[in-house]
Amino acid sequence: MRRVLLRPLARWRSSLQTRVVALTTALGVVVVLGVGTFLLDGIAEGLLEDRQRVAVADAARSAATAQSQFDAATSTSTPELEQLAGDVVSSLEGAGPDRVRSVLLLRTPASAGGADPVTQPVVRDVTSPGLSADSVPAELRAAVQGSDVQQLQLVDLRDGSGAPSLVVGSTVTLPRAGQYELYLVYSLASEQATIGLVRATFIGGGLALVVLVGAVAWLVARTVVQPVRDAAGTAERLAAGHLDERMRVRGSDDLARLARAFNAMAAGLQEQIEQLEELSRLQRRFVSDVSHELRTPLTTIRMAGEVLHDARGDFDPAVARSAELLLTQLERFDTLLSDLLEISRFDAGAAALEADPQDVRAIVHRVVDFTAQLAERRGSEVRVSEPHSPCTAEVDSRRIERVLRNLLGNAVEHGEARPIEVTVVCDEHAVAVGVRDHGVGLDPTQLPRVFDRFWRADPARARTTGGSGLGLAIALEDTRLHGGWLEVWGRPGRGCHFVLTLPRQAGRPLRASPLPVVPAGWREPVAALPAPVVPPAVGGGSGTP
Image 1: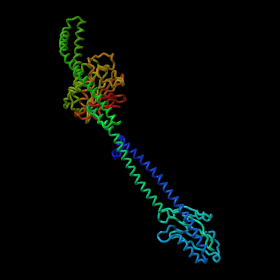
Image 2: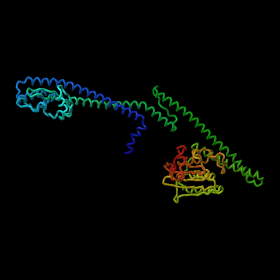
Image 3: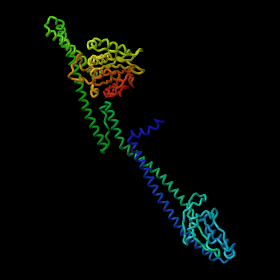
Image 4: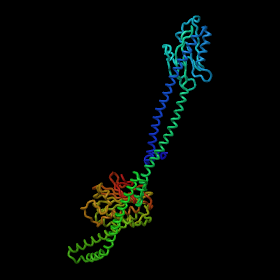
């Protein structure tokens, strides 16, 4: 139900055409309602005014006719007057089904009270069928009794038609009986039917107009939005690497100008990207070729260095020390060349993953054993925390060992002879390895650059383990190749915490890390590399604050 309710909202947010059509249709509904209400009120008011004018004129003629008939009466006995009153009322109503009005002839209370039946006969009220003296409002009777002019009022006589009526009242004088009230009732059923017909016509026409306005808005919006959608689709395909994509140009209007400008921009971008790709290819080839070409002279120089190093006992102390430094720097040079070759493979997309089910705990122990002498020399104690059950994952053990050796080597170098904690945690979907030192640490602003090539947090700090400056960059590429995350937390004087998270099944995307990268009690920025297809960014993983 929630998805059903949110679907129109999502459509509203994502579609410009939907918003244009909806807003135009809504404005059309408002305009139609406003104009229709105004016109309907005007028509109803005009019909009522016209009906009132006709009713007043007709009532005046009818009252004059009735008075002339009463004045012409020769017999004044009560039965004869009642018969005359009935005849007058019947004649004023009209004959048969074409009765145009209803009539009430009512006694005036002032003239009836205290009258002598002998000298002043009393004529009973005469009314049309369905009406009585109570049908006339008291305020209208009071107005008629207190004035010699006609009185008009719109009333609801509840005669079953559901339509209001116009009641016009005046006074007439019966022979010897005195003053009586004459009311003529004009039904507005016909006018109400006319207004209903007009209202129905307005509603039907308004709905048709709103639908027409919506259809026109949809057509216009589609005409304008479709080129924008084409441009967006072309831009997405260009971003996906299809640099030959272009928009179709139709006509010579503004949209056609937009398409031509877009195509010109795409052509310029394609040319620049191809130039950059060619330059990058040449650079990668240059690095690879130089690295290969340096192998032979480096091997010769290293052999000579080893000879000098082995014979250093026959040299004076200064020359012996120079031989030791020469061999150390040659080893570092050899490591740098190997790392450059590995980086060039990653840049060329030639790196391949050879994944096999491996117990990550065993890999961690091999790395700890490999760095044990270095840690002992630096005065750091390496503590390993791991679960009792196997933490098996499909990984390339050679690459994961290289990542962990780099992380643990950095922790030893920058750990200030303090304990180093290696933690292995796994759950149903992922295996995580954390390397935590308590040394110099990193400033939060430096975290996003930790994995940059040849970047150093403190350029003045000398390397003691002979690193090439490419270790973390290669570790990042190895992690991406596995579809894993490599995250780091740090604070000056509090050390760093690197967390490597790998999926237990190769190719399965990660959703969360079982090991938070931020230590308990800290809320600090995190640099995270969440996925192989996502560039390095700050944040990511379950431990990201």
